[in-house]
Amino acid sequence: MAGNAERKVSVVIPTWRREDLLGHCLQSLGRQTVTDFETIVVRNGAGAETDCVALPPQPRIVRLPANRGFGAGVNAGIAQGRSPYVLVLNDDVELDRNWMERTVAFLDKRPEISYCCGKIYQTQGPLLDNAGDALSLGGSAWRLGFGRRDSGDFDLPRAVWAVSGTATLFRRNVFEQVGKFDEDFFAYLEDVDLSLRAARAGLRGYYLPEATCRHQGGATLGGPDSPAVIRLLTRNQLLLLVKHYPVRLLLRLAPRIVWAQILWAMLSVRKGRFTAYLAGLAGFLRLFPRAVRQRVTCSREEGQALLARLRCSEREIFADVFAPQRAKRDTFWRLYFGLFPLRRSTEAAEPRQVSGVRC
Image 1 (cartoon, rainbow, N blue to C red):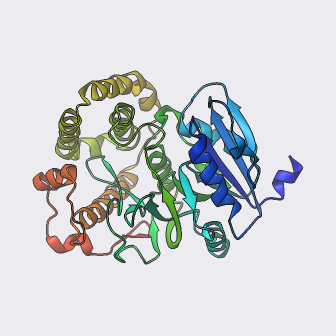
Image 2: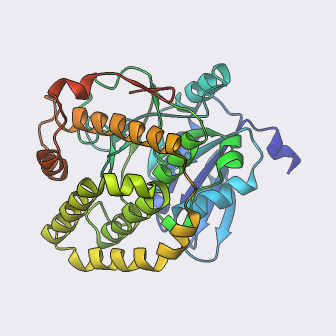
């Protein structure tokens, strides 16, 4: 393990049955303009290996006996390294050749920032996939910029509190301070859960638009409307609410939360995924006792800080989903804000400072 300590970055890539995607991901790492990193591929009960594991940089392989999910895979990889930085990377991502150089240089210069993400494009065409994550007052998450053309609205660096596990560079001490990914989530929203814990601990994140990559998105589980994705999102939305929203806040925001859940159920039915939706509810009920035990006692001041952060985040969602440049309105958010509109139209664009985060 002595050699591992000499590397500045540990790149952790969990993978499951998609050697084709993993090969392209490793090729993009081989093109990076910096070489001071190690690559750790965690095989979640993956099938037969192919020649992609021989591609430079040759990864270390961690084998899990079964598919334990994205969070467990990342956690296993983090435990294998000792580098001061950890890059959490999906196997369906291809990084721009300067991605690691730019993000590492930024964190080197800004010791007060604990993690950073970049601008993520969809694999095909000019559409964005993610420019930072957001969470509404109703407990529903959104990938900012998703489905929009890159018209310049996300070209400025900015502070963010929630980042995607798709491609984010963390200081290793983030995991030492707030813990690793919650493996109960298996996949989806475990990154929002981690972001909430990090924000509560006072850690700060940042978005660097010059660090770009491409993401195929949902490829491993069959796409965004697959039964597995609907089941996991149904369950994990509710886990987030139980773990992070104080009782006082749950009561205060109950109308929004109930409306968001009704909309999600309706959309699941519309997509022909009602069985998957019910499976998600059943999964939540099984994990409910453990989620309750994981709740952290929240002071009134901490509850108010969370409420302010969620209000800020919901304004970001509104500004994004109703942007003039967006050709297609998302049905969920159109109906959500139809019942709970912002108090005034200019509120969505007003920058505010919430716990050190400009939004």
